[in-house]
Length: 123
Length: 157
Image (cartoon, rainbow over all chains, first blue to last red; front, side, top):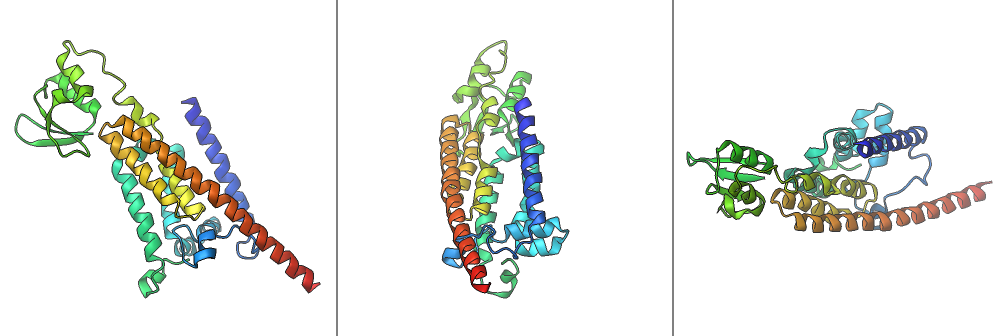
């Protein structure tokens, strides 16, 4: 239990530090922010594209903008919280793993479809 | 997790090994009860499952063998880590990591501890692969972009 608690503390510190950096940096103004390698090479949007900008928007209270930049990241945030502080048993449910796999792959495919409803998913 | 066919002919479950042991102790199921491990399609008598049968044959019921349930929480499935590397390192390498992470859960549910450990090892490997290849690539691209930005700024002055 002590190990579990110290892990929670480390995760919390990491989240606060990460959030601090993200909040301070005006994403987009500095071109050198970590760019998605996959996007640079292929021109396609991977399931994680827009995560930095989405978190930045979220930290500035722009929930709508965050959802538009990366719906998946925003929706998965509660899972991260659950992992850090909650009852972790749910992470060992067989359906959860396969569902997440399906959602990530489907999201990655759909956001690259250049048709109206799908373009909403692109960052 | 297991499914069982009760004395009334109806199917019950999925239930955990813990719960099944409890029912065994209460006499709701016995060594002849049809049991199906989750992930399997085969119905077998409870006595065919070594992890459950040892309790069924022994009277009085011994202290539950902790080995059946305990490892579930101890075998890391790297599910969160694999999702994180997929989203943050932006590499298709994260996808196999998620597949193996999901496998850990399915195998654990079927009480396949050895298989779960193997999947856990693979999930860990793919996580590190995605991280180890993704991070240096991101740093290289960042360096290239900084150099380009500095050059541009230098030219402007």
